[in-house]
Image: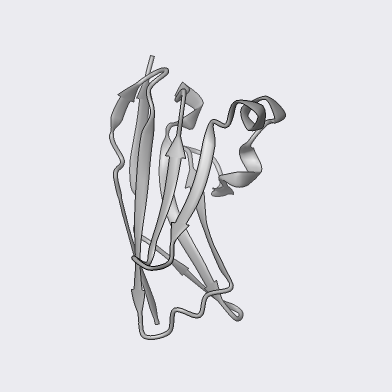
Length: 110
């Protein structure tokens, strides 16, 4: 069993930055995948890495890092845009089993 707890969501202004954290715990942490998803109002949940445009990639707007020693996963978002408003979820997979956190709300005001 894997337990994921996100934190760091907030109300921020356009152009700001934010770092989300995910605490990973459980009896078996031999995980195949750990990543971030997000779900905007009225939209399907999507992989954060997948929404990066080439422009965003060049500008490094999103950065996912993992601290294995602390069992932490981070998502740093720079230059926040209104379209980044969403609930952000930490996700992990072990074999064919998916685990999800409860989500943390990020709201970007213009």
